[in-house]
Image (cartoon, rainbow, N blue to C red):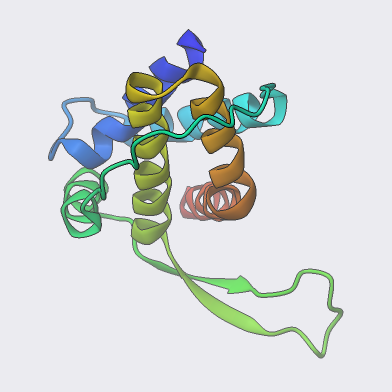
Length: 150
């Protein structure tokens, strides 16, 4: 759990602080995203059915503003909406790298809050649930975006 916490602290810094003071932010972010993904693929927990206080709402606009200041070259990208369809039926969509990272950070801030305010199992459940239902797609899309920008 301490490794996951360290990764979350490092990634969420890009959404909490404007102009994080490291020179190779994109490379650092890419490595952190891969490590977070690995943690997700290996997460183990037991469901904690205790009732806890609800987590606070993290400000999307503020996080996005900080993400944009840290990654000014992140922008819109094209993507295939259903990779399992074969041409000529391929439907193209638009993604937003700033939104991808903002959503990932928002989800990880919730996990971090739960680490501090609920239980380890509740935090790990939140991590698994948010990745499975939301952040995993953002993470994969963002890694692909970064790779294509290189």
